[in-house]
Amino acid sequence: MTNIQFDFGMVGLGVMGRNLLLNMADHGFSVIGFDKDIQKGAALESSATPNTVVKGVSTLAEMVQQLKRPRKLMMLVPAGKPVDDVITDLLPLLEDGDIVIDGGNSHYTDTLRRLNGLKGNGIHFMGVGISGGEQGARTGPSIMPGGDPDAYREVKSILEAVAAKVGGSPCVAHLGKGAAGHYVKMVHNGIEYAIMQLISESYDLMRRGLGLDNDDLHKIYRQWNEGELQSFLIEITADIFLQKDDKSENRLVDMILDKAGSKGTGKWTSQDAMDLPISVPVIDMAVALRDLSTYKDERIQAAALYRTGHAHIDVPQEVFIQQLQDALFFATIICYAQGLAMLQKASTELAMEIPLPEVVRVWRGGCIIRSSLLETFLKAYQANPSLQNLLLDKDIAQLLLAKRQHMRNIIMHAAQTGYAIVGLMASLGYFDAYRSEHLPTNLIQAQRDFFGAHTYQRIDMPGTFHTDWNHRG
Image (cartoon, rainbow, N blue to C red; front, side, top):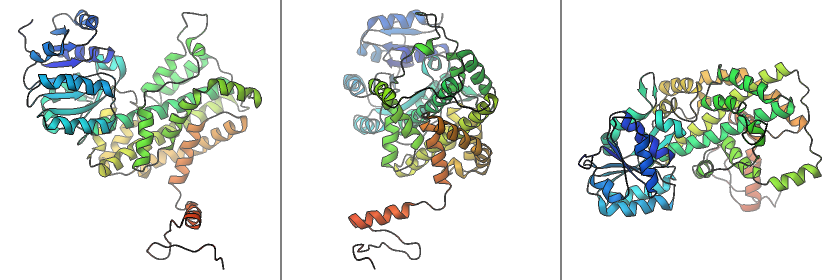
């Protein structure tokens, strides 16, 4: 096999890198991979489907030497310095026209820096978002490439072959200029944070508020997944409640500490939204609640201080569950609307030229936030690709209007019984503010001008104004 010229190389043979290479091999491509851990290279070869061409090597130079020109290789290593270190090691081994892809969750500003730096060396660099986790990488992920269109044309056939398919259409597309691929993946992850927060709140209301057990919860989420809430995240939530703990007699979900981790992409979404600026409060609150969850010791003290109990929600069970289903559906639409509005604004403000219809199409299969709702969103963007916010689409407005009263009922019951549903509350607050022709922000502008001479605009004439508020007449 040493004389074979390989179609594609991978740096980093962890779960994602290994499975993506095996996926490529299953589709007829010859692949080669490198990892500092030699055993991972051996594991790559032993995991390969019979009669596919798969090789693991122990040095970068050995991998690069055996790639067809122009060389096409991907890095799947942790974001930050590890990516820069790999690039530094690769540069002396590459030639003009070679293509280097970062398939990890790098921040888009790092991707822009690397793209511009490698351009001077004649190397094509692409930031590519990949969603679907371990299983998706092996059987078909959602792939979000951006950047150099010439480089994309070189790898297009490989990416289309391994991507998830919906109606025969591969869930991959060139999603814009510069670092658009990683920007889209960042916002994807922000939406993911928000929806996970909303689902966890619905779980809390039923588990503690109604006193349902894990079997009940499994049945409810399974039923929800058979209806308008159908999605990957609802599907796996239903499955989670059946998982037994191998260290006790309990269900595993009940043995997991309520402290959530994160890898930073949700935080980046929130931070970059503020820089645009664009409002994404459900994503903001999802990030904030993960942070708050880490203060477990303080929460235990506060629970004792404020005598926090498990208040029962005194609403007929069937009625409450239906209202909660509608509220979760309502809030999920709001999550997507905020993330996609962020992409629409970034497309213009950051000159990325992100095609929103293609983003939604690519998300329909393979990815963590795939959902039947995306078909509705796709129709909205196909009808109006420059749609600034999904809430301005008439069909989506009708969906929200049909659910809004149940959304209000759920928030009322939760507020009265003391359950923390900040994601659901932020969803309704955003909806009410966005649809309001008048906000009380005129008072804020008056306050700003009063103490800081920040000026204001008027409703009756153009221009910028300042008042000496200390001389009140």
